[in-house]
Image (spheres, rainbow, N blue to C red):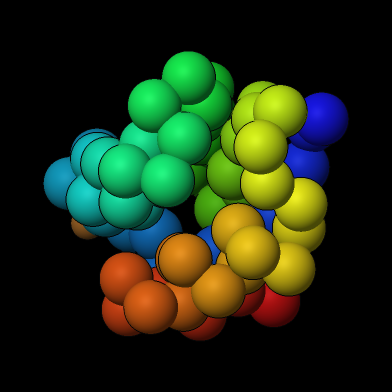
Length: 65
Ligand SMILES: [Cu+2]
């Protein structure tokens, strides 16, 4: 499943790395792609749906809109 989320607080590669590693603790096979200009995160995962991904990113300290 492909999920696209907007994360306005994602400012740099450091943010992307923190979010990616949090997601990968829940699904090591997840693929995460970020577009920093558009604050867009694309997550490919067979294990998780959008609500769970939102919860993980929020818990990591980033608002999802
Ligand atoms: Cu950052």
